[in-house]
Each structure stands twice: as C-alpha cells, then as structure tokens.
Image (cartoon, rainbow, N blue to C red; front, side):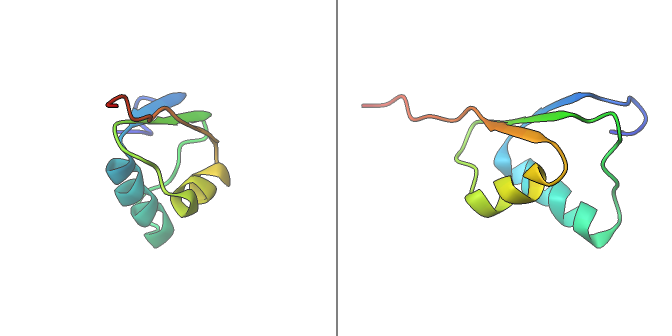
Length: 68
C-alpha cells in the first residue's frame, strides 16, 4: 500500500513503525522513494528505532505526557 499510493508523509504509532521496520530489514517491504517524513505519536519512540528510521527519512516524535 505504501508504494501503491506513493506517500510522502507517514503518521503512525511506534509499534506500527517497529513492525514495518522489521519487515524492511527482512526484505519483505521496501520504503517507497517518495517517503520523506515520518511522524511518530501515541507512545514513546525508542532511540534505536528512531535511529533506524533516521537512516531512511526525517523522523519526528510527537509524543509527550500530558497527565500531571
């Protein structure tokens, strides 16, 4: 689906980004050349996963605790 629609921006939760990266590393999914930016939110993004995505695209984390 990523390649069919040639997306430029992906907004997803970290768990989806983790599964997608695992498939990329296994070679079952390719990152489309059109993808430029990934926004992660809904939960903390671990640094290792952020670095992996950073090798391919610009990645931004939009997660922050709001409960005080």
